[in-house]
Length: 126
Image 1 (cartoon, rainbow, N blue to C red):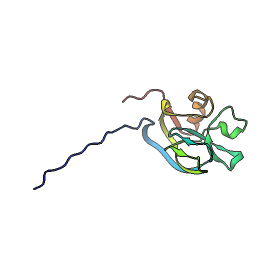
Image 2: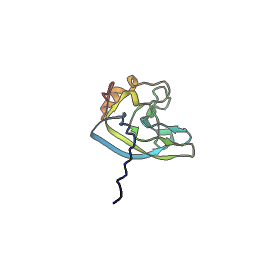
Image 3: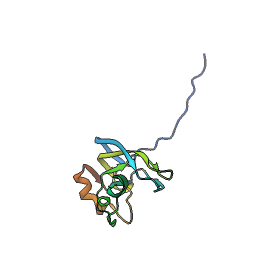
Image 4: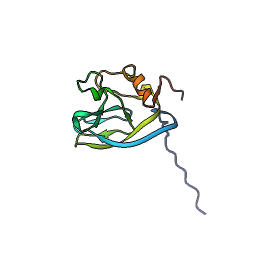
């Protein structure tokens, strides 16, 4: 009889999603030419570019880019052009894991995100 083999893998808990209850997901197109956007980037629809997604930026002259609509569920490389991206449309997220465009912070978008069902917490216990 052969001895059993054992292996182990390290486990890194998800630090972005705080609670999976109420998590809503989907997929949309992210505008190309933005390089790699990190998982956790808060995105808006760019009305000038066929409503493709870009990082939310309250300083943008394009009004639609001021309004957060979703959070990237994975890193997305847009250097080769437009890219399909998995998204979170609703759920509860760790503020420390979110990224924004420009110099924006969670304080710039928290209230608007809540209205869309994107809730945040400032601290998450391990």
